[in-house]
Image (cartoon, rainbow, N blue to C red):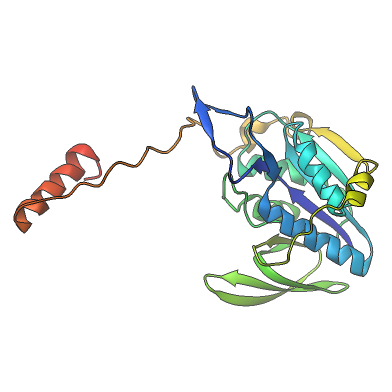
Length: 253
């Protein structure tokens, strides 16, 4: 069972985000493995240990993504590929780079987090499956794997759907799929000796302008919440005051 895990390095979920002149400042910020991807790593290692095979981690990002990759290797992954890019990538570009890495490789299963905590689009794995011409099952909370198929229990708006799919397949992990392990000291030592292959995004995807579907126009923090406004007077007067406020101040009417 050869498994590929798509991994992203993200800001710590408790980090304070600072934006200056339209740029997110990374000074003194802790970066971590995207929490949803931890479930994917754990599930991959679990099935590798049970069925044999390998677990390969693929990550796209700046060179610092190596820190997250080493965490995955310490959790039990066998090797890793890092595609370096200093450019902010949309879901389409990220999926295209993963496709270029994976398309010539032999694999039975691709696992990824259901979404990244920084963008939350839940698009990369789905687009990757489409490019590879294979099926996918998203938001999986329970997974059973056999020689040639999987049975996946997926979270579907408060209920559970049970889906059977034939390998190869793309699966995205939802919270609750498992309990990700903490890297042990032995695992950390072993990770230092595991191979990491470095590739360039620009080499894999030279025509990014034609691949990207979204363009970053501006980066800014949400507007700070204002104190609530209490309307007084007769009901009719309050209604008129509310409409005037929404029209003149909030520009929503």
